Length: 495
Image (cartoon, rainbow, N blue to C red):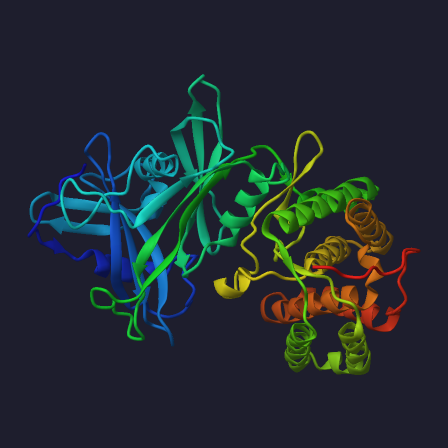
């Protein structure tokens, strides 16, 4: 265990360093504001060589209307870490140890290696309050179906992430074979289990291979801050959530978005891969329903879901006045959905699109990132939802692939989009108990809702692309037919 230096002074303090640095990070939610940081909790990991300090801080940022809790892992070094200049949080003077270079820990190989040791249950979190003591509020859960003993030989942070930090670990097993692993370090913390951990673990434990193998996770407790961001007095309320999630990494594979874009550009028939993706989606939905259960959708909840859709339509129409032209058609679709038979609620992916699926070397599809829509509160993302939401999300993603290519060429991709969408639905229907097209009002409502979200996003971030969701809304509004498009009659719903 690392030695704590009680009574030592540090200038500037750790909180001061983090506060000055955090606002420029991609995962910091309150862009454009200056963080105001309070320390809530901390725990350590030991360095086997005894050279590097590894500490995980849990802090509250009170710069916004309500405190936001973040996980900030740090490493402390007596000399600069070569090649990690972009990860330097700052330097401080320790009254006992002298100058210390402080780094964002996911970029430090010592943290990466020890975090995986913790995930696999080979080390324990250490206390920051006493020497030779463990922190029992931090618990690792190795994957129930994971049987490899792996150790880290190299690590690299995955670039481009917004809300979390993922580290790719080059690992070796006991037999010397290479076993790549990716560990996701959750930055913004909320009380409750992370759906990415819960759903992928449930799928693997049920024998589903449509998600990467789960190595394990780390979860723990921290004091729940009051309105001012301060930690409660001893015995006050505590929060619980996940800190990290490790799973098998699939190198050298492309996500379905890139695969689909290449197919559109080359004019290649995508019906085969799209059908296989529909089959994989149905398999995952069925496994989640069996593993985690279903509940009936009450008429009250159906109305609540549709009311939220109406609110999103109003918000989108406020951004793009032309949407008011479709008000009657949108209302007709949502009214028809309210009168429809709704399937049971179950756990779903929640943010399903082509970028969340990998095309493996053997041609199979693997689904990723079950966290749900990142802007929704964790409490909502942990609730069961309508599986048809995932279907609508993927149909919209096929349309976006076609629209993206149409933006750069004069050729139409409408035939490609229609073929891919229908093949995806065919594949889903072949494996599932029913065809999504047997619920035309619900399918149209969820597609419309997704397109409304896209309109607002594009207007605010990429105005030249707003024509893609606007054209989709036009097609949905003008072409809606409440009659099922397959020969199979709608089935009675059961819990």
